Length: 193
Image 1 (cartoon, rainbow, N blue to C red):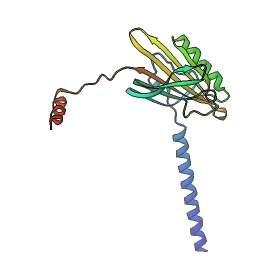
Image 2: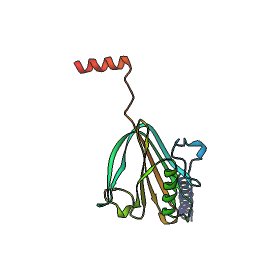
Image 3: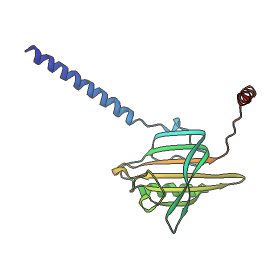
């Protein structure tokens, strides 16, 4: 009788540990940011009614961005742009279509002064790696006085009823960092050695 009881206790312990692990994992997987806790881009505003799943803002980084589109060949031109890079991942309400979401983005970006480079289903485009075929992709450009243009790329995935989107914004600029005087002299000394 005792070995059976030990097995029962082990089984209960294993089941309790599994439930605890799964509940912790689902808590972390469902964590979203409150808009007040996320710095909003000054030009590209948050998507209304969507939950911010993740974000990343770097003062200087690089991102592969669609910067052009050839209508005849349906080929997308991808360039690696350097500058301030902001990425926002959103979860959208169930029942919203990917087309509705991308058209809402497009209208808001046009109102903010962007021109549309491309909006299409990923399956219709050549040169895009990664996004799923049922996704929509958009590339936008805003020309700015005496500054390089601002680029926005977005991907909207229908995700079986609960769509998500990724917005990548690049403000191209050269790196404006310099070495402190003592570091520069040490670097010069290393070069002589």
